[in-house]
Length: 334
Image 1 (cartoon, helix red, strand yellow):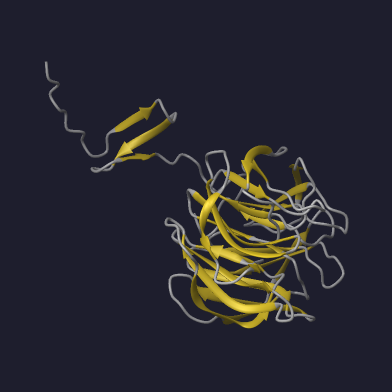
Image 2 (cartoon, rainbow, N blue to C red):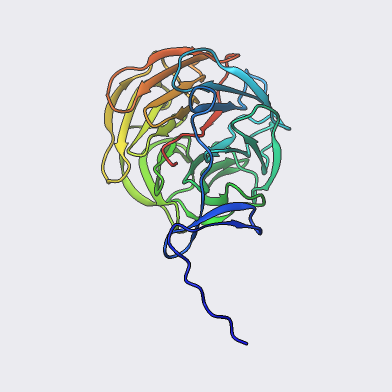
C-alpha cells in the first residue's frame, strides 16, 4: 500500500529525535529553532583565555560587555597556553592551540552562559599558535599560525556545536602569523600579521567567505604594517587595535567595512600602547584587554563601533598579561 504524501505547512514545528532540537519548516526545509540569547547575566559576555604573565597561564575570565568593571574568574583550561586561538557562537566558546611552551593541537570548549573549566573538543591537524579565530553562527575558522621552525599559510574550520577535529579550509596567500581577525555572519577578514623576517610586520588584509572553503583573497591594506594587534567586530565594522610595527609598539585603532573591499580607515587610539592584546565584542561595543606596552598590563578599555574616537577605560583583568585571546557570544559573526 502506498503512503499518501502529506504537505508540510510553512511554520510547522517538530522535534528532531536525531539532533534533539526543535525545528521549524520554512516552506523549503526544516530549520533549527534558536532558543539561546547572547544577553546573559545583564548583557553579552566577553571571555579572555590563556596568556602569559610571563609564565604560561590556564586562566579564563569574563566580563559583561555592556557594563564597565573588572573581569571575574570563569574557570580553567586543562593546559596552559599562551597565544591560543579563540572563537564562539551564541552558546559555546572554542579555545584551540597555543604554546605551553611547546606548540599544541588541543581544542577545548566552554559553555559561555555558565562558569567552569573547559571540556575536550578534539584536535587540530597540527599544533598551532599565534593564529586568528573567526566565526559565523555555525562555523569557526582558524587562519594563519606560527609553529616551531616557521610560519604556515593554513586555514582550517570546525563546526562549533559538534566535537571532533578541524578540517582544511584553504590557504592564505603567504606563510604568516595572523593576530587580528574579525567577521560578519558571512565574511571574515584577517588584519595584518607577521611574515618571514626581515619584512616581519605586514599591512595586508585578506578575506574569506565563511560558509564555503577556498583560499583567502585580497581585501585591502591597513594604514601601517603590524602584528600583535587584535581584531573584533559587529556585523558591519571590523576593528584592528594595537600591535607592533617592529620594533615600535603602537596604540592605533583602525577599521574596515566588512561587506566591502578597501583600505582601513583611522578610528582613534587606545588609552596606551599595547601589543598582543585581546579583543571581544557585542553589536555596539568592542572591548580590548591586556597586552604588553611593552610591560604587561591588566587594563581593559572599550570603543563604540558606531562612532570613531579614542578608547575609554572599562576596568581591569584579574592580572596583567599578554598573548591572551578573546571570544564572545555576541560578536559580529553571529
